[in-house]
Length: 438
Image 1: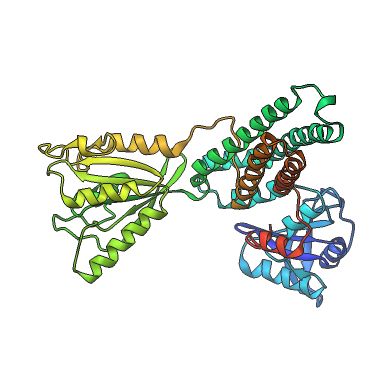
Image 2 (image 1 turned 90 degrees about the horizontal axis):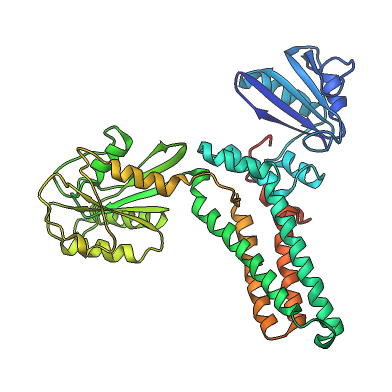
């Protein structure tokens, strides 16, 4: 079936047509004539009744040298919803079908034009909210994740082959250090996978932005800190405790990385029903955040409410920044009572120290390390890790047949990162989250 969708819109709209009838339909719409592959042809597009729809550039990509691996024709039309919709409607009337979300990418994967990792990087690139994320995703688009998976699979196949030799010929017929060598190479493979999972989880905020929750008891200056970070007055600032009743969320770009700050209601014991709801929202925001900024008032002695904040922080296994605000006033807060050394600032004067810490935690200098770009990839790598660790246990117990079973299971998980599972429902669910026209 030949499919059609708008692939891009703006001053120029791009309509993509893919399938066995793509060239035929394009010729019908453009009045016949030759369409040389990979040449831009200026054509008048007419409806079946002869009505002029638009004058557009028509480019034909002959299979298999196209995005999908099928015949593809792109119509570069004048921008605007009306003109491109009229062209799409005419192509539908001629026999094309409206493409499902991600269907072009799905066909590209099934036709061997790209692997799953590249397809997911395309989707992530479209959603990327920072320049650094785009640079890192470009590496996957160039095939580095596929190369990583291929290298790891070769290593596991080598390990499996030597294990099979041990099973077939017995320990007496093999050098004594064979099993030790297998274990050493297996440990190295586990370390590689643990490293890519750790880096990917640290950097996942690069795709859609790091979420940072600002928490503390009432009137410690959380809203003042948010305003200072945003460089404009977004939150209402008042000396009255409990001014902030709901969470306030705003984004700012820190050296190419999107950071989403969430100012929360002060956390304390309250009988006010509205304030209690706001406090629950504060705790949820902290739970959902990638990083927590906990604010304490330098000008006052530590209170029971501060102790509750410290206790709450201990329950979260995530990055925390402790801030001692109002340091322009007399220092009364016992800093040695905090679990880590706080950053000392005055929100109304200077928050440079806090900005530096946020940039250090969220920016992540570009390095030679790869990154997984989807939850699906992370789950597969974690599943492979589990199998390899089980394999180590079985190898130490000299249960070589079960060891081989776990290595084979790990191989399947690694292969699934780049190779499609030929199950229509699985693929539909995977590509269904993609943009229409991609």
